[in-house]
Length: 377
Ligand SMILES: NC(=O)c1ccc[n+]([C@@H]2O[C@H](COP(=O)([O-])OP(=O)(O)OC[C@H]3O[C@@H](n4cnc5c(N)ncnc54)[C@H](O)[C@@H]3O)[C@@H](O)[C@H]2O)c1
Image (cartoon, rainbow, N blue to C red; front, side, top):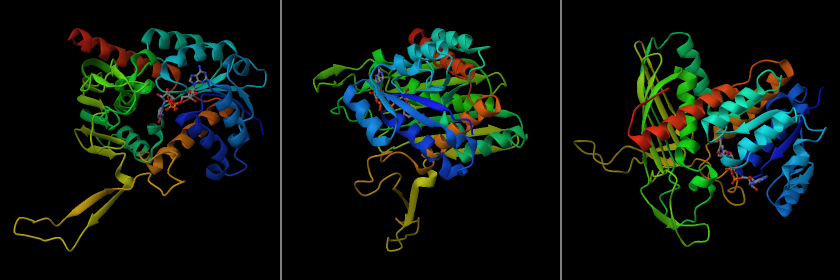
């Protein structure tokens, strides 16, 4: 079996997720599947201590705290980019210059110009690049795509997609890089890029976007706990028109009190409708028969209890309380799909030009919000 050596850059939440995917492929796909010969041969984080701890404790090869040596090593076949958004561009350029395949977290870049440059640079190199829009690999999304392709929905007429978290509702919680515009933070890049990718994947190319952003809590705790002026959108509302004529709404928000990882979409066609709720496999529906009924229904009915990813300690740390069970599975499938693309020389999903398109749409949405104008793509 051809061994594919992976250089992992970043070992936060997503670095762990990707490591899990690579290390567990054999359980999902069988020990003889060619992708299971892939190995993480080195891990790079911003600090010596965290890199050494990651390498040693998680069996990730050698520790690095400067990515260059690892990216340009002759041993490396694939560069896995799991760092904050702003750093993707620089690492992508180095990986292409070094002639390595790329597995990169979303968003590809935080500027359409940079994304287009990367898409151009990788063209004709024979290198594979895949962006981690893992929701493409959730079972109901795969089936929705199949139904749409089979014409079971008829012509797509409209859509609503929303992605809500609650992480910006606590203003006393110190911010991280995802709330810092200087690091490529902002909810449209973070959650919104997934929503845009899903509509792009399921319904096709965008024609126009019209956006509005929201910062509900302009002052919140900074990294040091002192008051900090928010410069990254906490919510974003987008009206979009597609080339197929469909129109719809895209909402990305971290202002949803009571939400966990609430990604929902409905796609309406002339012949049918599909709906997806990411939280659905995670909810416990409960009806307390002791509750009083009444002429109009009283209080009897089903209660939705949020079990999601909650487990007793110490099993409550990763992937975290808000990660739904199928989320990890879609990462494993996404990685398997990417490695198979390299081994079988077939297109990746999504490839760099898809992701560059998503970047262009997102940037246009920001531009629309700033200018109050509808932007044509
Ligand atoms: N696909 C998904 O489901 C999903 C979910 C969450 C985040 N993401 C994306 O994954 C990426 C990482 O997010 P995260 O939540 O893991 O962030 P994180 O803050 O948990 O981890 C970031 C990691 O990058 C490392 N890092 C920072 N600067 C570095 C440098 N100069 N060199 C090397 N390493 C450096 C940090 O040490 C840390 O290990 C982001 O692009 C984010 O948008 C994707």
